[in-house]
Length: 129
Image (cartoon, rainbow, N blue to C red; front, side, top):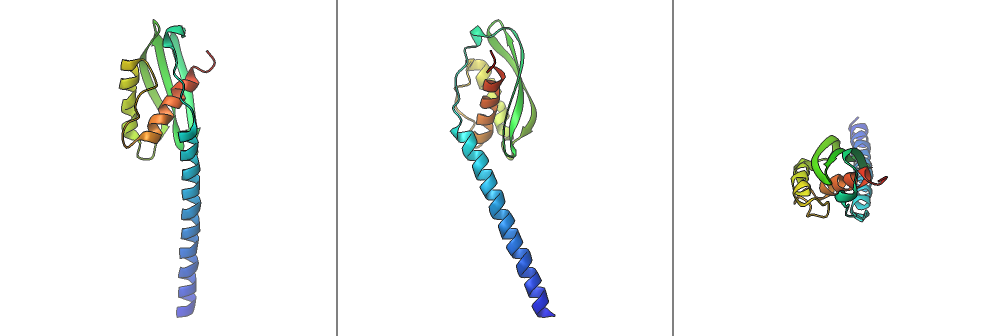
């Protein structure tokens, strides 16, 4: 009986290790994709006034943004469906983007991946322009 219990526990531990490794690989691939994406600056003066929606997702990370432009300036950025793990502090990056009128700003320390997702989503909002 003890032998069956030990075998059962061994199988459970082995499955946990396998699933852990697979989860790590998935997160690592999503993170590498986000870090490898080029962030290009946007000239908001050349963008028509209006509300723009953009998204960027990689694996279980990403965000949808709603960006409002008025008189060639970003005046507001709202977030939807922010899949961020521990990256909630990145949401404060919108103040810097609005102040600088650029997405080429420093990422929020400790929330680099989520910061980049926000910038990439904003960039995607204007890709068709």
